[in-house]
Image 1 (cartoon, rainbow, N blue to C red):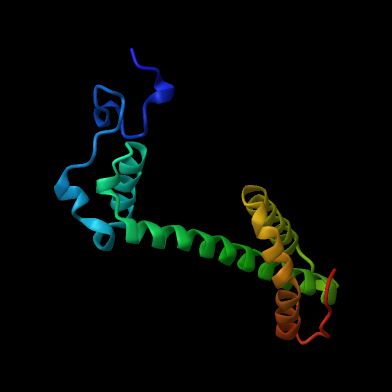
Image 2 (image 1 turned 135 degrees about the horizontal axis):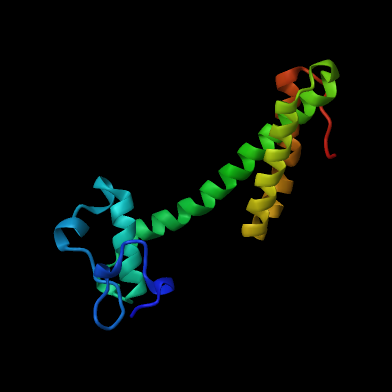
Length: 149
């Protein structure tokens, strides 16, 4: 009997006798990157895990890997911007402080913490954009620019 810890989400039918995942049928793999990126990614993952170099879509794999870094940086920028905006609102409008602002501040901090724990190399990026996101938020609310915290 197979251990359930070794059974992938797709069930037992995806495995060959040697324990490697079966490649998807060519008609499905042929759908390709431009038609169904999730299906394409699944087929590429199978090829990578099986060391099936011939089935790898090198150009699109390289593009996807490059996009991972961009996506992570975008997430840092987005969460830091929200944090900066709500921190400024919290400072300049004490009479309007609410639980939703506090929750937004806490959530942005938590998301940034998770991103940095997952990818510590993002810390220098966060530090490099900190003053700009603060200045952007200050401009948005018409308050004097400050740098640092």
